[in-house]
Length: 67
Image 1 (cartoon, rainbow, N blue to C red):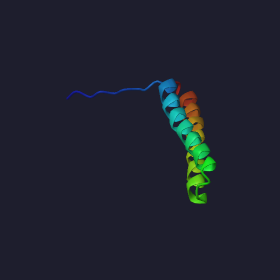
Image 2: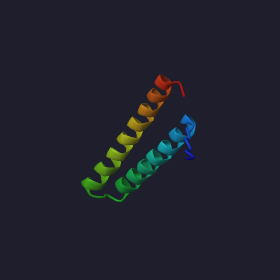
Image 3: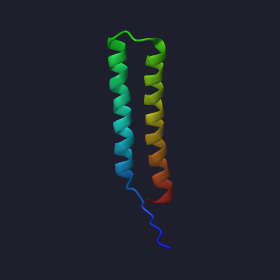
Image 4: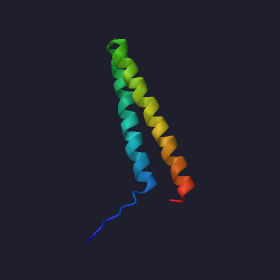
């Protein structure tokens, strides 16, 4: 049986999470400019917070596991 194990590089994972976080930041700016509902703005803020948490978690995990 052939098993493929791919260890993604931490920098590519961080870039992917950072791209998603930047998309949430842009969406928040557009939502604020268009006077969107509070629910939409808080959704963008939550996405930004989760993105930053994901970056922090990925960096800490990489340091601990020695990747």
